[in-house]
Image 1: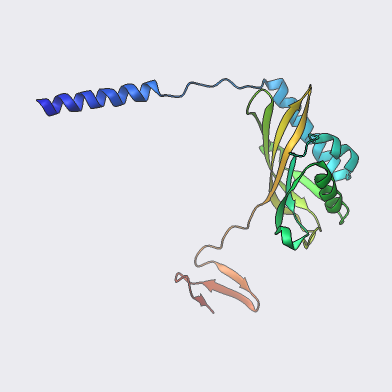
Image 2 (image 1 turned 90 degrees about the vertical axis):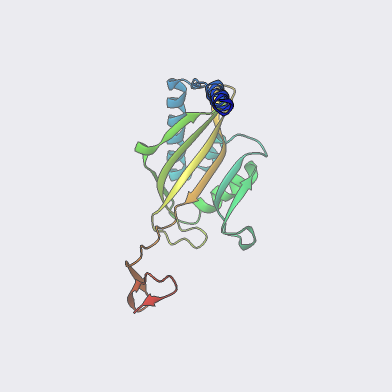
Length: 196
């Protein structure tokens, strides 16, 4: 009887705690018109990037030493991809990339998502293909993800951080053909053995 009483008390406490700690439904901090305006700013960013309009691109970024661009690096000591902090470094990196040859950004607007994080901060996400010949890239369109944090500055929205990430190729499934230097090889179900 005492055990049944303890089980009942424990179950009641757990149930009450679960109900008491359930997260409240959060209201979206930004209205539809604001989210639409940020989507338009993103479209303008793509237009300026494809035109290589470096002066106008500069104006789209928050003017702060804390502004961040994550992109391909041409300097070995920085690694393959690096963070470029502050407007001077971002301006230089965008100029270097844009001056390296044709650069074409093709976002999949059907997958563009903009959400409000606070009344003054929003985030956008979009997959895209980027064609570029910078820092050893061969000018072939490749898939990337672009994630931008937008900051309200006065009545305008500025880019506080822009993160461009390459999408790695999907790994070959076991038993699928894998191109080798002399033709094709099959990947064996044994991970340390490639079949001829």
